[in-house]
Amino acid sequence: MARNPNELVRYTARERANHWLTAICFVLLALSGLALFHPWFFPLSGLFGGGTWTRILHPYIGLIMTVSFLGLFFRFAAENGLTATDRQWLGRLGTLISGDPHGMPEQGRYNAGQKVLFWILSVCMLLLLASGVVIWRAWWSLPVGLERLAVVVHAASAAVLIGFIFVHIYASIWVKGSVRAMTRGTVSRAWAKQHHRAWYRQMTGKS
Amino acid sequence: MALQSLDITRRSATTTPSPSARSTEEVAKLIDVTTCIGCKACQAACMEWNDLRDQVGVNVGVIDNPPDLTEESWTVMRYAEHEENGNLEWLIRKDGCMHCADPGCLKACPAPGAIVQYANGIVDFHEENCIGCGYCITGCPFNIPRISKKDHKVYKCTLCSDRVAVGLEPACIKACPTGALQFGTKQDMKDYAAERITDLKARGFANAGLYDPPGVGGTHVMYVLHHADRPELYNDLPRKPAISPLVSFWKGATKPLANAILAALALGGIIHYVTQGPNEVSKELEKEEEENGP
Image (cartoon, rainbow over all chains, first blue to last red; front, side, top):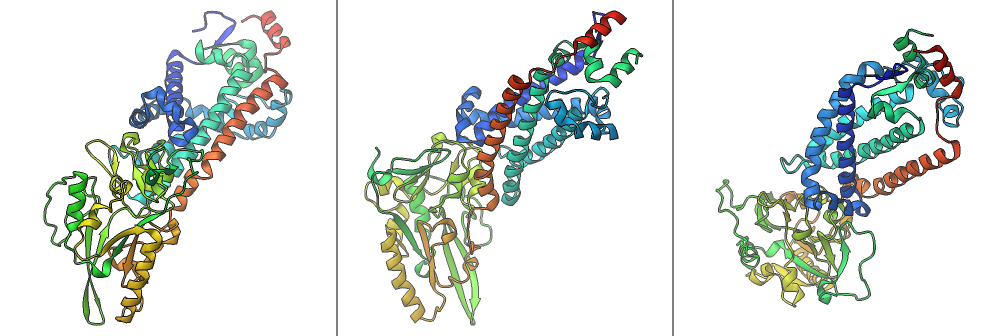
């Protein structure tokens, strides 16, 4: 709820809780997954009580993240459809990154970059779940050819997911006011007008 | 350092070289399939020396017992009936770890020191470091490691590394009544095999030969086969075993590639922030909103 009339509600309490549950799962999964991915990161397994505990816990955290991510998916999927304007926006992404926001086509609740991220993360989550189930040897052993494919898919989609989460985190640090949207739920009217003008108009009824 | 015969040359999930100042003779077990009578003394000796007592199990209709390797049966005899030129041949193969020079299990293992290769060529699992992921099973081209349902650790033939370390031959070799199993330096075993092959060829087995597959860098368990041109006759001994390209890619290119991309992204973010500065709401918009009011 916006206590200050100059603020707009961007994320409800449930959306925020859902996001941060997913985020915590992601951090735990990335740390434990990297521990098993490369010898450099194996010491991270100490955070989980050793290598064996890391191996035991990782898939269960993955299941929690799957459920939590599904919550986010169904909350946000409808608003993440890509439009023709989004293609223009993506075409001008370079000028935005180099510090010039002028001339970017106006965006709704999510800009094209957020939408692309949304769909890439969704695909990665699907691949990680499917391949992770295949290599969950605590419960079953599947044909070795399938397992060999699954380990590659799991590692590759995890690397892509972690990379895009880096981008996601950086974008929130770079665009001032974004972290507040996901921690407190609100943004200033000026923030909305600058970054998501179509959403601003929809929320305020102003032009 | 450990005993010279147990100096470690390769260690799983370790990126720096192992101590390598000393050099040790490579050893090998030679299994002469052509003189094996299928008595299973080697299986019994393996259980005896390693204190393993697998479940008695059930008769599956053939002499194979147990029907497959398990975490408590590190070697099993596999029997095949093969007809050739009107003769019935009973092809009996002692199955177990081949102790590859380029071990797929070791390559796939994510736990430092859970799988080692000694300077003498023996590939050994150190179960106390095993985390139970089963990646070694995906790495092995011979389908050898077995994960225990009891402790979720992986087990296989050690080539009796404990016996070899103190100058004894493996237990199975000691028990073999026909001399079908031999143990010595890898070169001696190759020389001995060459004599056997000459003899077999003279007796009509034109395709007799040594199974020491180059796809895995050679093995420290080798077979003398009457039909070396058709290893699959011996209960599907792989014709050209090699580490799966998927496993090589997973444990090869993806690791540095993923690390490099993630590091570049993190560094790129920091550089972008300190060169471009944050993307803040413009002062004009803020002023505009203040004046207009909600």
